[in-house]
Length: 125
Image (cartoon, rainbow, N blue to C red; front, side):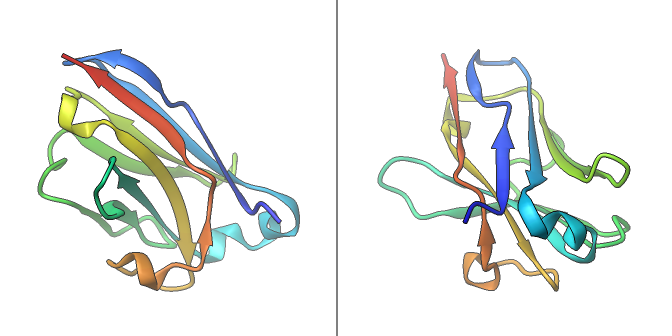
């Protein structure tokens, strides 16, 4: 069953911005706040790579070097949603973006057992 639902992807020109959202579905909604959340991305013919992580409390965040200073991960507890604000987008940011959750902060795709279906971000030059 689907436990995470991403939205907000689309086509944008280089230099533009997008904001991705990720919300839980079904029974997972009641425990979503207990989990660390992460955004990964997978470009064609490449491995799924970590983009950003936020701890359960929101006090700790981590960013891949390639997005540091351009992307911001955040959460809204009242809306039970995690976001990825992406600014100054580049063609190399083109990928399917996935939301993931785990009871502990992790930095590998193998640390996460709960995933969304992904949302496509395409950045044109």
